[in-house]
Length: 527
Image 1 (tube, rainbow, N blue to C red):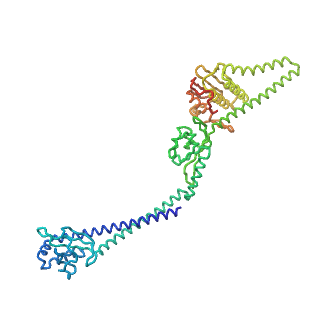
Image 2 (image 1 turned 135 degrees about the vertical axis):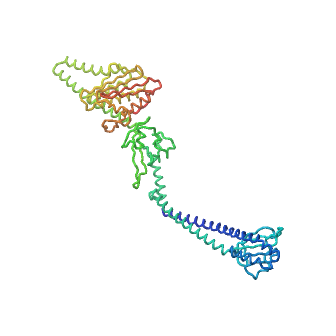
Image 3 (image 1 turned 45 degrees about the horizontal axis):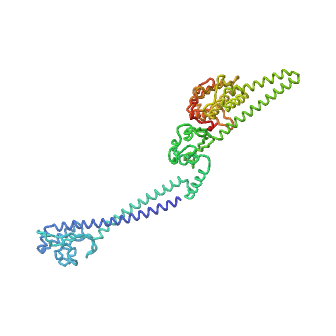
């Protein structure tokens, strides 16, 4: 491709310079013709104004004054000839003395009172000439002065002009060749030495790949401008149709997602929470031939997957709790069987009644104070699962929650995440490990969760609600730094408040307004 570009550029340059030189030569020749004609006109006008010439013409020039004057003009101005005739065409001066006194072969041209310019063939050869009338004192035409400059003289000047044109054209051609070589080298470097057919093939493959995958892709150059974006990326980022060529900062508002797109936050599989989705972002630099040409950002929608993982984690927790309860009940049955074997029937009866009342009272106590059955079941499950981790979750005695217009699903997400965070925070801490939850619906819905762990450091208060921020080790298959950010998003969308208090001891308070227009029980949130 480079050779083709060079050949075409040189061909165009040669053609352009040749045509330009020809046009310039033609214009220069025409200009020279006109200049020599005007020069001849000036000499002829000067001779026609000489009083000696007028007087000699009127007297018939008996002293041959006109020939002498004409010879002096030829020596001084260097025309080819100065011919003076009377009104009838009889010559009074001529370079060839033998023609003096002879009649002109052509009519006297100035009898019309005008000057005449032209290029004509004469006895001395082709010349650029001018013919001027000679007038007497009363203005009548008494003769004609004809001055000519031979074409051979003009051609010498034309040859010099042509050589100047040739030199200039050669310089332009040399610069054109150099420019063509530099341009070809630049094109070769920019296109990575690919042929046009290869570039077209790569473009087709890129378009097919870009819009054929379900993963969101955003291409950026070194200046942070969007170079490509597929439909999935437009959907996840709520981008406008015409975003190519705009800064990536125009795609999303300030926040964690923008920092991940711009590379301000490095790292692989970084989590970002938007108003509608949970996204996993990866940003990779692109380097070709040792040069950075930008970066590619891939975005995956993990909203449903993360919800399933969290649900599965909860199910696993319940299964572990049930497995532990199975062992506990097996031990209790062994106690009952032993008592019966020893004949202690009354003690066996009392033991069975005691453990039955304890289990039933916990569930009935929650159900009596917490009206939404889903929330009561969630609390009971969390209490059971936490007990297996040697964490005691207790619902305060003053907790009351009747049916509310606040979305039950949102409430379950808030309570579940706050309790999970509290239980996780107490892992590997000294006994006792205590978590309390307080619920109240006197004015909207109030939820307070406290634990006796280390709590949130004062310097982390402003960061703990940011999606992706965590101080805990990652659990297999589950991403950290999402729970509190999700709670914050739900609270913000419900026009509520979320307060985080510094440690020691974890302390989170949530208030949701009792708004009839708030999301209903069927609204879905990411868990």
